Structures are given as C-alpha cells and as structure tokens.
Length: 112
Image (cartoon, rainbow, N blue to C red; front, side, top):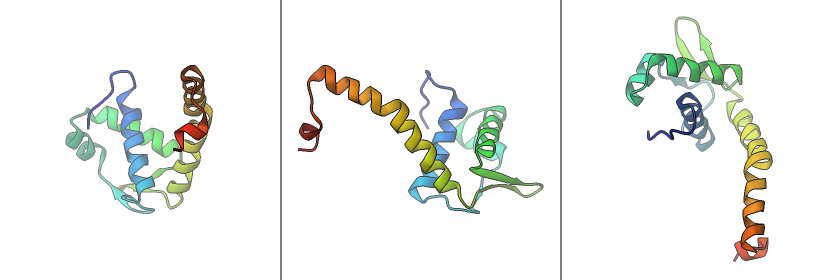
C-alpha cells in the first residue's frame, strides 16, 4: 500500500478496509487480521493499526470478540456506503462543481 504524506496513515488504512467492504471482498462477520498481523503486512507500527481498528470500531464498521479477534460488522457495508456518500456530497462534489465552473464545463459535457 502506498501512503499519501498529506493524510494520517491510520485513516488511509481505514479507507482501504472500507473499500474492501464496499467491493464485497470483506463481508459481514468476516474475520480481519490481528493488529500485529495486519501492521506487519503493511509495514506499519502496531500502534497505527490499533488507531485504525479503534476508529473502525467507533464507527461501527468492525467489532472485537475478546480473545478471538476483529470482525466486520453485519451492517458494515451500509454504514460505509452512507458515510462515503455523505463525504462525497459534502466534500468532493463541491470541489468538482467549483472546478467545472472554472473550466467552463457543463454536466452534459461530462456525460458525453
């Protein structure tokens, strides 16, 4: 995984896990690697992975079964979908709209 220096690594990893859920690669109740295992595979500090898992747990996307590991929540796909749609509408779309205005592009030109 290539990391962007302008965004915290733990958020980038959380986004990557969320994308795997949206794509169907990870489904509800699927087990995900341990903090150490996942951190080693990505070459990041276990503390960074722990922050990722804490964020995903707080967002209700994954949950911990004590002594067993972390699992994808049954409704994780819907939660990720709602969060990403909200971010697209509130953050990305206004940027796209502004860029289109600056370039003099209309929506119909993009659909060609």
